[in-house]
Amino acid sequence: MNEKIKELQKIIEESNNIVFFGGAGVSTESGIPDFRSKDGLYHQKYAYPPEEILSHTFFMTHPEEFYKFYKEKMNSLKIEPNGTHQKLVELEKKGKLKAIITQNIDGLHTKAGSQNVLELHGSILRNYCMDCHKFYEASFVFQSEGIPKCRCGGMIKPDVVLYEEALDSTTLEQAIQSIMDADVLIVAGTSLQVYPASGLIRYFRGKHFVLINKEKTPYDSLADLVIHDALGNVFPYL
Image (cartoon, rainbow, N blue to C red; front, side):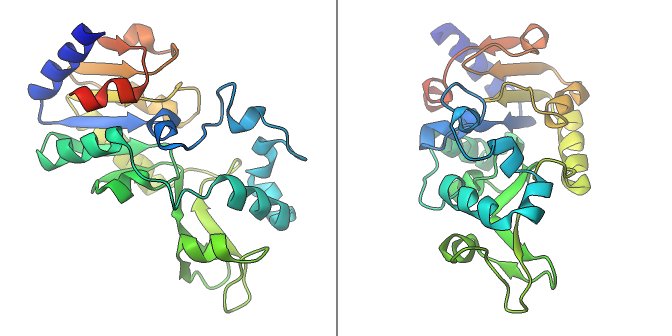
């Protein structure tokens, strides 16, 4: 594994146009549970399946149940960024990392200090009234009783992409452009099974495609370098 980390180090040293594409595995080492692993949210028992709770239809028809689950499972405000988040901040400050594309909604990249973060699935840090569009901090939503309501009486919705909802077109376009412009693409902590996010890597035309994930992914055979390990065993050693 050390040889592979050395190889990754060399790739990073030789590039000034890196894009990082991350999934749940980036945040699990901060203590945030993922969705699809055997211990993930989708394998826990709830009155409704988590996939159903986190859908647009469920949010509109059962907002109280939605917010009960959301406040219990999605509150990452007290969670701190880990070594991977911090290393990405370093790489950005050195001018090597041009963009972070993330599927996570926890806001930890922003909390760590990264500047150019493209959040494909939105962020718990942004919330807005569905009627008047007034903005609300995450703390207001998580501290509210029952369904968080705006002063105007409208229901507040987290700015996260629920099932049945489309990704933000501007964020998607920026992510595609960043990947197309990059000469190194590092994909880490994702099984690459969630579409359309996973389809983005097909836009990469650069020099080195690096894949870091605990388990195998459908794209391993396309990568120039594959490291099957936790990110905490890789990034702090760069």
